[in-house]
Structure formats: structure tokens, C-alpha cells
Length: 288
Image 1 (tube, rainbow, N blue to C red):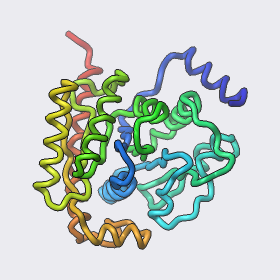
Image 2 (image 1 turned 90 degrees about the vertical axis):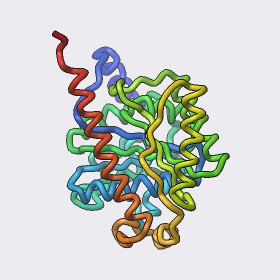
Image 3 (image 1 turned 60 degrees about the vertical axis):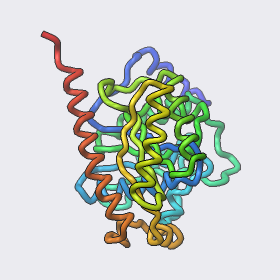
């Protein structure tokens, strides 16, 4: 870490404060790979952008990034260029359309820096300033629960956990929620559930809802907390086609089953976001 980054972090620690605004920062995470986390992040963000919301999607899978592959885009300024201070934060931003912007990571870079919590904090300091331009920021996390992912989750407002119905995927989602709980990660919306779940690749709605109930029962019994089901996305051949063709499902196949389900998820997500904003307003209201 160079001297400029160190000085910025030291200044932030002396100030001992973080900017707060109405932008909702969401960590999209999963207990294991292959659940469709990046697919969900992109398509949900795209739908929100079509609903006239400003959305920034960040690929935080660091050196195993794939958001650009799902869009068939060439990465001009990967995240490592910012960490190496070759570009400004604004120069990282790829503008897919007027309302949806992205920050791409690297894939197999030989000089990708060693990621530390301080380096993640350095990124978030700049993200806070940029967040004024967005309604939502989705951080597409790496799968699992390593120390970097835990720190990133600690800097978000909500956790959107993507799981598939298989027992192994549900168990991995439970372990992720358990680790978040044991880390004592506090969010700014304390009077509402912080972990929102999407069950992806379900054979039908009933299978997805049953998988969630199994997860919710374990979380309630062992962790003494509540989680919320945002919705179920079915196993749709068109979704697979959009991935292999490197096209956004909701842009190219808007009437497919999975696209209509994500459309519904986006509206439910907006309701949760409104609850979060109301929660924040209540918390800021002076006591009588």
C-alpha cells in the first residue's frame, strides 16, 4: 500500500465518520459458486434502471470477475487499475445505459494487488462520494465468506443472498448467514431483516419456497434471527440461452418466464428499499 492510500485511511480514521445518504448499498452474495449470483445482480439492476432508478453494479469477485463476460463487453479499466492508482474512480465506471453503470474487475491478472481490508476501505471511501449519483449500488461479491467478503458485507446496508434449492446450496447459504451473524456485522437499518434471499434455478415455485423455508427454519432456530424471501426464479432454458449468448435476459428476452419473475422481484425489492428508507428516517427523528 502506497503512502497516498495510507494518508487517506489515516485521515478517515481520525475523522471517525462515514458519509450517510439515501443510497442503498447491497451486497449480492452466496455461500457457494454457481448459484447465478452475477446473473441475478445484472438483471435485477437492469430492471431497476428501466424503472428509472440509477444503479451501479460492482464486480467484487476481484481476479475472477465475470460481469463483463455476461454482457460481452471488453474491460478497458479494471478494478486493479484503481488500486494501482492508474485511473480515478470515475474512470472505472462503464456506462451500459443512462441509468445502469458498472465497475468491472479482473480475470487472471498477474499483477492484481493483494486485497486487504484497508484496500477495500480505500475503495469504499471513494464509493461513498460517488454514491450520491445513484439510488442503488449492487456489489457482486465473491462466493463464500472469506475475510475480505466479510469486511465488504460490513460496509453494505443489505445482504441479498442467492441460493439454489439443492441441500448443499441451502447449507452453504446458512453457513454464510451464520458467519455474518457471528461477525456481529451491524447495519444502519436495525429494525428490519438484513438478509434477503432469492432462490434461483428452482424447478417450480413450490420447490423454491420449500428450500427457503428449510433455510429460514434453521436460521430462526440456531441463529435467532429472521430472513426474508424476495422471490423465486425458475429454471428457465431462456435464461441459460441468454448467458451462453452473453446477453441480458431482461433486455433480449423480456417475456420469458425468468424475466417476468425478476420483474416481480424488482418491484418487491423497491418495497423493501422504501421500508429501509422509512427506517432510516425514523432512526434520525429526534426523540421527544
